[in-house]
Amino acid sequence: MNKVIVQSRVSPELKEAAEKILAGLGMTTAEAIRLFLQQTVNSCKFPFIPELRQPKPEFNQAIK
Image (cartoon, rainbow, N blue to C red; front, side):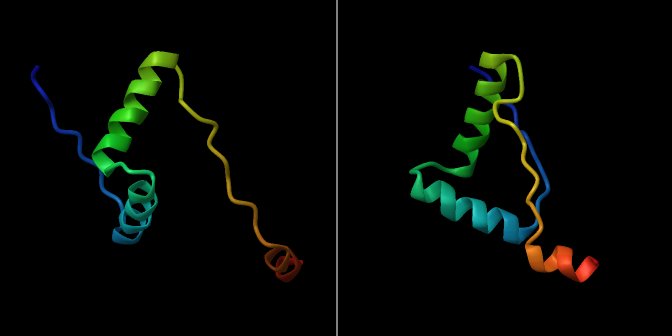
């Protein structure tokens, strides 16, 4: 089977943080990307619901 290369630019901090979590799950970044793509194909949709981080109450208070 032929393979292609998929590239993405991310910050070193994001890559390192994700790799630590993925290693704890027993997978590599490449495996996680393949899983994401396969799940997208299997379900014909985004495989999860993206969530925005909610600001801390201190942030909201400072804005007021």
